[in-house]
Amino acid sequence: MILIGTMNLTRTRQSGQFYCPTCRCAQEYRLRSRRPFLTLYFIPVVPIGAAEWFVDCRGCRDKWDPTVLQMDQREHEQVQAEQFQREALRSAVLVVLADDQISGTEVKVLQQIAQQLLGRAIDREELGELCSIAQQNKIRAANYVMTVSRRWSEAQKSEALQAMFLAATAEGKMEGASLKVMTQMRDILDLTEQEYQAAIEAALQRELVE
Image 1 (cartoon, rainbow, N blue to C red):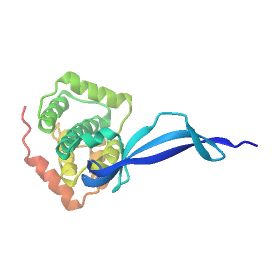
Image 2 (cartoon, rainbow, N blue to C red):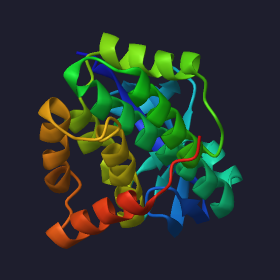
Image 3 (cartoon, rainbow, N blue to C red):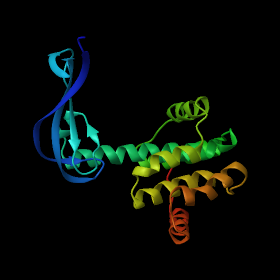
Image 4 (cartoon, rainbow, N blue to C red):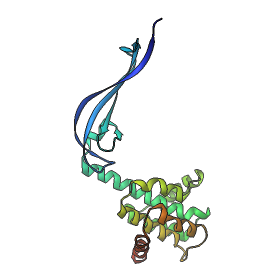
């Protein structure tokens, strides 16, 4: 009886240091290749596919595309900052949409929040697209923030909470679905009562510029 099968062989091709986006610091890495082989009596004899290359962080064990080695710390931090800005804006949009409707005043305030977060103006069309996607996918603010906030720093949590609070109080008072969502945010963001109140107070001091 001839035993034929397949197996993946993984080899380390290079090692060194790189900036890991997950660890947010320099870490040891291994550049590795994984390739499927046909085996005969459990011995790999013939490659049956192209090699897959990946970078393995020795710190967090996350795996990255090899292009991560071409980016320096500043580039990574810029990418992460831009990602956070988009996530914080979407969080604010979702808080407004908690009651499944949006007013002209709320649209105006969200545009002002976007100006502060992104450093650029967004028109009603771009904002409308964000709202439409959220409504079509039935994304809820609590679920979204619970997912994306895992990679936020403490300062980013505070900034995002401020944006959500300003959105929730766009019409002068917070009530109904928006109030319910905002009361959940302290636990979702894993903030102490003092940290939560400090963020709210900071939001009250912010001036939204048209």
